[in-house]
Image (tube, rainbow, N blue to C red; front, side):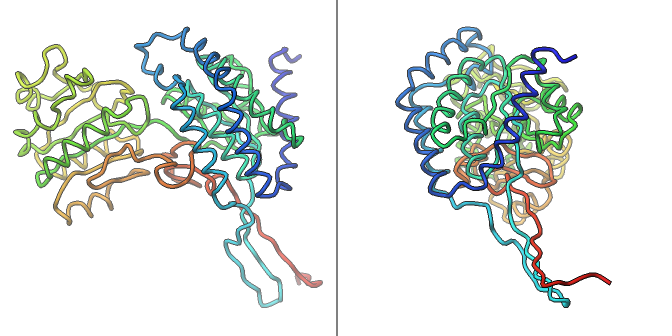
Length: 421
């Protein structure tokens, strides 16, 4: 016998699956209208959203790394709604003929892009994801099941209420389902292969691992970013300083933030300049290996510099913390990155073109950079409007997942009575 929680989830998923069939009939004009109306209403009712967000924030300590991810304010809401409007303007990814040919027997074949169907998004602490997922799913013809965390319970309810208010004008309110925020609800969603076509977890490595290990539905892994910046012996100091500072300090709670600075031993003399200001501006804690520690001791604020342990590497800090690894060669840098990378974003700072090209070819990550901050690993920054997340796997999608990555395809075959012998 099902519990009340299971019954509520099953009913919601069944309704969402049935409603998803309506989306394929929407015109591009209608999709644009809906997205812009939701953006307008979110601004008009921002007090409601911010009040709900304040309730969520009141249950979390400001020192928690998730606090910044949870925080909404007028400036962030403006950015979120601007992204929705950009999604509305993007080309429709559906109905694109990806391949076509005519066989010798006269059959006409076309491979055409179509929606995946119902997307299940499981995420932690980030209410902006609710808007992003809705916008991208609607534009790509997908219904969405949203499983947020208890941290963002009130924020997500307020946001989905606004979305559904607009969708109701088009009889599409059931194409978005906000699942209960209780942790116990997740297992039931991951087993719902009858109703959900694909699950995408966004959050900690623990969440991603749980989803991958327990889902009966296909999973696309996104999120966890253990990000390295390698300062090569031929690096430009000004570029290195700017890139490392921006990648680490711009916004520490996001998956593209820098976690480990890898530096060639010949550039250790420049290390105090590369990390200059991190202590005064942001109180960044540095966990440095022996050589780096000796160089920084006396050149970095006391109480913020620590000797590294093995456990300090391969960590996604999501905080004002960073490890430093000294290497004797470019090859050693590659080995370190390979051993500890989550295959999200990696960067080399170098003026040696041959080394740069080798790095681009041999580093296994969704986004690989030369002389630029990893903070650009973002769907909006890549010109995709917004993103569901950044896929760190290799099947179906990799890197920022936007409209095209939320489609599948089908073969359309036209004949004139042909039969197979």
